[in-house]
Length: 486
Image (cartoon, rainbow, N blue to C red; front, side, top):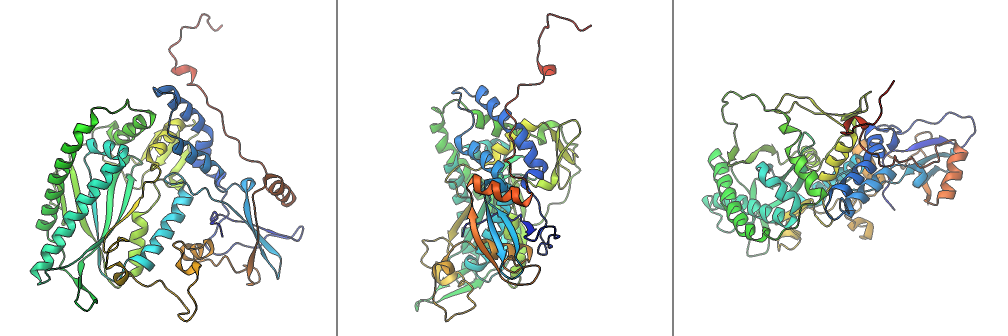
């Protein structure tokens, strides 16, 4: 069954009857009703044309960026297709519009992916243990290279994870465990808290190691928490190895092509909005525990989850996988400018970022991950090729152990109904009016068929219009007009 958009539109088949309420936790919300959708629809063509004009080759942004915007504009639009769900008892029906599944741009689809991946990690990857979040951030001069070079991201992530694993093995040897294995799951985030381009790593690592015995059994041994000296040593090792890695790769940069439109957008996103004003100097503060700062690199290891709190582990996993932008923080001002509100004030003291529509679209384009670039990475015993993985990862939950294993049980993803129930606590397979079972009648995508159904139900059947590319305002042009106004 295809995964569908979480927004739903409910209606009654009986003419004139009031629509039944949606399940608890739902609210009908069409994609084009959000401020973010309106901003993208009004300004994305202008931004794309400006990128073509600025690029040396004339092609503008990469094809995957343009396709992500096109798919986002079709996300949740009933006219593009929907699933028709009906109750056989009371004839209550719901239309579930399809999602775009774009990465890094659509908050709804990224939110679905966040919840789905977090559930997968907790149910099928992360065994019962205490976990610590290790967060590694890079200096600003290095962030633009990481955004442009996926291979460099992988190399630096390997350096980081191996440095933490080396610390784990050293502390394990102090406990009399000469041979031990560790595991890690990393979420590669390409954005910061202020909608700036800030590629950094969030890594979940158990506070312990696994030891394999001669009889083939595996035992988990908890380790004492790291000290400030341990965190400092790991940060120093990462900085040294990163410097050697960058020195070897610098010789390959001499033949690089001229930066394209995406490179200019990423460079702008790295510098702003933080560089618009100089922050006031802060008074000297005491060092935070389990945090290290060295040569622009920062390492944090103070966030922990107890071994018996799986709900907190799933919440932490969702935080690591959260979308780049929140639709609730985007607003269009009366003068047409766009405001993005921050969750907390930035270093300059501002609580929001105000800009124009094309600039916001260009910022979103810089945060879209490239094709075939995995945003979740596995190392150690959690990697698919490790010899201990099958003996370490938890067994997938199965209510009926005697039932035969089917393809759906082995599927990596949750189906859309199970996912919505886990996220919102709403059972979309049960009718909200009579508690009878809901059944999917059909998946409809033919424009003629969907238009007739939507017209019959009195719903909007047209595809939302997209504004064409526009030039800059006349006030921004330095022109000498040959006439004067009377």
